[in-house]
Image (cartoon, rainbow, N blue to C red):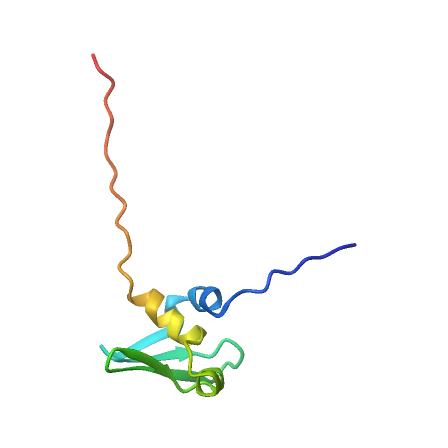
Length: 90
């Protein structure tokens, strides 16, 4: 049997973190619950327009991690659903 597993990018993994796992302290500071530890989490902070995280991935790479992508996704405005009623011409 051939099983193919798609590897998700950091951005995709970040966007998959549920909003309930992201806590905002102020406009520039968030805490994102760890996806692998029930008691852990990471601080994501905006310093002069650049998001930084205290997780090992970000500290090692100095590039956006899944926690940064999760915060960015949570901050994006959600599209509003507009319903309208269509009436057939008489």
